[in-house]
Image (cartoon, rainbow over all chains, first blue to last red):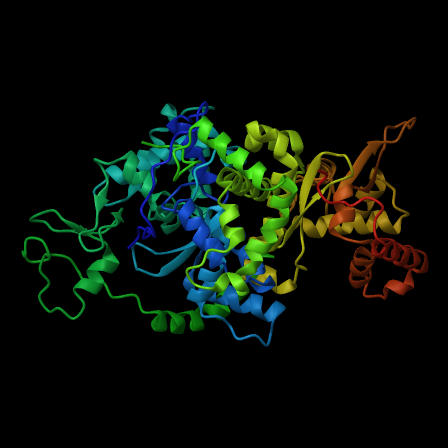
Length: 314
Length: 286
């Protein structure tokens, strides 16, 4: 839930002699244009040997998919499916379309030795599945390729801290902008900072709702481990899936928290929801479980609208 | 807290790393290592499938894990750097990725090139012979629907670039800057006026496209007032052909490429020249 599942236990790596980066520079790694650097149990070399053995066969269908996935960084499942169909149409009309899960696994098998992975997660608010191309290895190489300047990264860090420290998982733009005087690097004005925040939203690192910011699922997929290790005292966990929780519901008696999609599943068809920890009455509205069928119907209706919007943009 | 995990899985001391390298060198030459990659990355269908038996090539690959990791870093570095479309300098690769592994740089580069092409469909080529800078060429033909699935994240500047490339080719492969702006003005693109899609067109054409090496831009000597001229840059010749550009121009004019006999002949000759094996292989020099 929210937090990606680690496929294997993390193996502690020795710091490389002579070039240990300071945490702030490490932080920049997260912004290397979709190829974000964080290791999350990519497996040691023993795993890598296995992967060599079960490495799948990939074709231009997979390659085009990967290329387009790289330009997006993150996509919702329905768009991933659309992308997959598109790639089959371009290269191999007659081939049977691989099941999405197998298709992604196949791609991941060749990505593994490169420490890159197409990772699946879900959005924290309504539980829709998303896929992001993430980087599993820490490496110093991509930080220069970062799209963001030092002060911009520091602004993100400030926003991240406010979001994590908040009870709701949201930080107001006012509170974030009040910190611009403390930023490292070049001086930033509030007006500029507002634009940078919008850039974070565009690049799907942050989500904005009514002047408040929270983390995008992409950021959680890519930085989950970093956040847990950097803010061990401030982070919240979900009582159901035990993953990192940014926004969710909490028990007013014992204080445990749950992701909204976890709440939805846990209390599905329960008439009198009670806290799984203290058994007290659960005082929040129970959200609906994400239903892709329903989603598709809604998408069918709005598709025409979206299309006209796109053509206007060009 | 935040650990550097390059050599994750094996807390590597310098000595250990060196031992790995020594082992790698003993068992096979670096050349051999390079040749082996396609067999490991493509070989899942063959004999390697047998469950539980580790294939010889997989085992020997484990002999140089540090090298594998360097290759992974190199691949990521090249992918990220290429997004800005500025040729990647060999010295930058050495400085930021290769570090102490300088003596096997050609082998690392060869392995990275194989991975890039097999996994992502990008071909690593040296921009010009002995230029020591590299670019990635997409081996997959762009299709129009790509833009559709990409949403609005396409690159509208490519259209302007194609227009300028077409103009250069149609005008005999060299064109004065003043002529370019005379033409673009008719399309509503002015050198001094901010454009709603292209931003600062003057900067885009005379700086960005030049730095990306799509265009050559130089001062014409002994002119008063000062004027500059454009030609195709080396990236253009690697990413596209005269025939493709001519077809683009013809499409824009709703005409046939053969309607411009001189350019058509030149484009045909260019295609024939490309079909011949090149005198020097344009692959990364080793």
